[in-house]
Image (cartoon, rainbow, N blue to C red):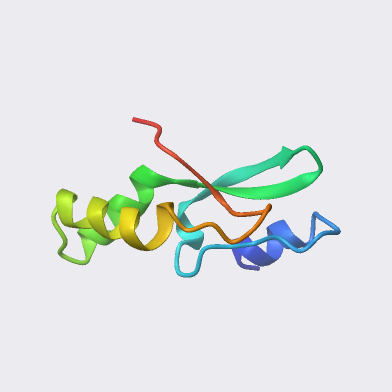
Length: 82
């Protein structure tokens, strides 16, 4: 079973996931009743760098396309752990 399916099976409400980043999920949080998926920015950058991007290219891509996107109250959370 994939990460997103395993997590979704644990909760009654539909979780919002960032496409193509399942390997970067580090958990979930309960945000006053809204369960939100939590992603590691460091893992996301590492994933992009494995495709050939530099650190700065990966960071810029994430900031423009993912980190600053608001998709409602259950928008995923992105954290840096380094």
